[in-house]
Image 1 (cartoon, one colour):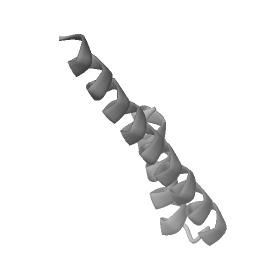
Image 2 (cartoon, one colour):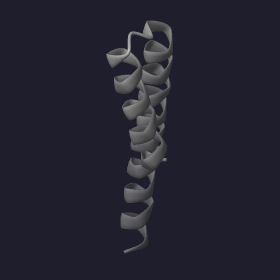
Image 3 (tube, helix red, strand yellow):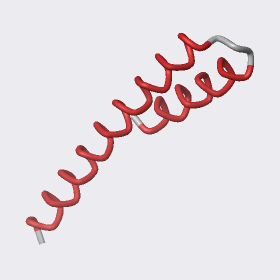
Image 4 (cartoon, helix red, strand yellow):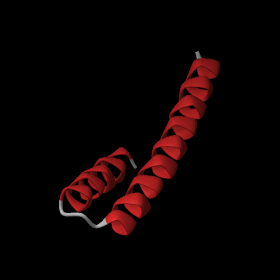
Length: 53
């Protein structure tokens, strides 16, 4: 999940450098969504892992 976030951030940066505003905004939006999904899943995993101890 985090890997895809980094890929979309790189795509957004490259698209912004070359002047593709729409592609850049879309890739940045997708990267944000994926990052927040990653954070939620990471926190859930941490909480569930602590309950087993």
